[in-house]
Length: 288
Length: 220
Image (cartoon, rainbow over all chains, first blue to last red):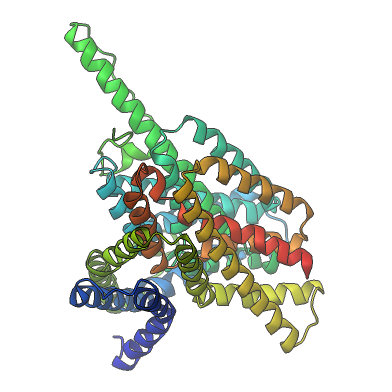
């Protein structure tokens, strides 16, 4: 059980993190805009909720997820588990459990990421529900999962990071040309929001543990970089999600048109894609 | 999912089941409260201030506000402080700075200010973009090109770190506020679509730190 003192500690730390933001907001509100706060009671209650929510969230993580996550990260990357004598070069395929674990950590932590939830709420609101909050979160989470798994592969094989990142950029730029215009800014944003409170500590632990145990890797040089992967791949997966949803919508329209002409439509093979796995099967795309 | 890995793959019992369940409950309760608070406090505040700035019509103060929001929230970001300290170690290892407490501290501090400056700059750039209605993908693509060029000339030790610093800058409180700011601005300026123009501030905030940090690595 978390003690009361612990609660106070985390509360104070979180308050300290929030304080500069509140100072800036208050300063501008009163000194520059010279306006009283509209609805001050509600705003203060809201801030209180956010603060309290974050504190509970962080303590819960500290109690439940972080110890296990760190432990598992080190267990999985342990040479003994992988089945190699220390110091001996290992084939990258023997690390398959690490990739599976990385995938799951990426997925699970991203779905629970508070800042992603915030952006997803806004996106749903602005698109009048066309972009489902769950669909977006699942798409982003899949992107992070793939990104981190690939990042682990990179640490194991030692391929320089910029090759991956630069080819990632090329894919992003190409996708931007084809993706529905509405989704582009949101997709770019989702790259940045994925990595905060939950993901960074766990992923960093995984990266450092892995770099330490794989022979020939330097913790300092190779341990970094997982977060970069985790912020690049969601951009692609969100655009892919939108493209797929648009494609599906087009197909459905075509099928309906075909059905009206009494022509039987072809069965749709379920392509392996984010939107099909997610519970949020709402159709985004362009909310015109 | 974690239970599966613990039991099936690693074949180890889960330590402290009760503590684990408590933790999960707290995470759930915390998230619920957080979302409530967002809707009540952060979103209306961010959007309200954006509207107020738009009414006031002073671009100068809007930009000052955008900059201080980006700078102020980043410079105190705990994840950034941790990463900066680690980076100082790398630099000391590589012989870029002297291996003593003082030199490493000043390196870490310099790095923090670099990242905070870059985020402030990014939010300003994003706000100007919303005001002018520039297309986002062109700017991001230019950013990418810059990153690639910088990668080619920056010292190797800093690259992984620079790429990561893009991701850690955006904290849980900053993201909702900045999003609300963008959306509020885009919806109060005529001819802007909040969906198209409101998003994208965070994208800038995670791109510019890479460029700035690599530049920092080259200068030092």
